[in-house]
Structure formats: C-alpha cells, structure tokens
Amino acid sequence: MADGAERRQYSRAPVAVIVRVESGGQGRHYYSKNISPGGVFLLAEQPLEAETRVDVEMFLPLVKSPVRASGEVAWVQRQEPSGFAVRFTDISDAARELIRWVVDRYLGRRE
Image 1 (tube, rainbow, N blue to C red):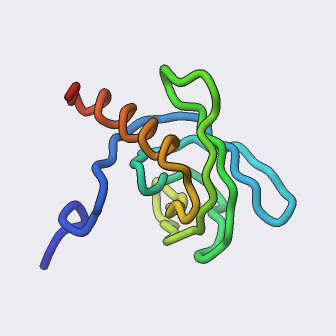
Image 2: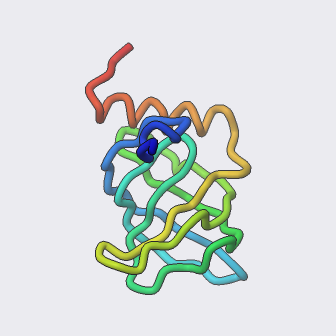
C-alpha cells in the first residue's frame, strides 16, 4: 500500500502561518499545520465539513502580500490535531510558485 507522500503531487512543509478562510459569507483565521503548492492543512477545534468551498488568504514568511486561492475542504481530521485540509481548485501560477518557493526554502532546497 502506498503511503500519503507517494500519492501527493507536491512537497509539503510543516509551516505554521496565519490563514484567513472565507466560506458562506463568514471569515475566520486559522493556523496552518503544513502547506504545499496544492493545498493547506489548517488546525481547527471545529473543522469545516468536507466539500465546503472556501477562499483563503495565506500570510507566508518572506512574502509581502497575502497569497490568495480558492479551494474545497478535501478531508477532515477529528482526532488531535483536529483540522481540515483545503485542496486548491483555483490558484494563479504566480501564487502556486510563491508557495513552492516558501516550501522549498523551508525544506532546505535552494535550486
């Protein structure tokens, strides 16, 4: 059986940043557990439900402006650490590259 890392398209890094999530006219701030160019896992005592459509703004280290994307809740984790994963469904190439740059720096890649 393949583990999760083999199924992932993008590398992810355990980067804790503030992420603003808007859904259904409501906005909340969360902390990320990890990020990748394909999505983000957010810590939450009361996670959003799977398939919820969201807009996110991520405040990444070394990046002046927030990175914006739209996505949907891909899965929910109810045991500690509880939270939910957002898969990006609409993100600009520039935003995806900024996230990749931050992840690569965090993982020690400087290519």
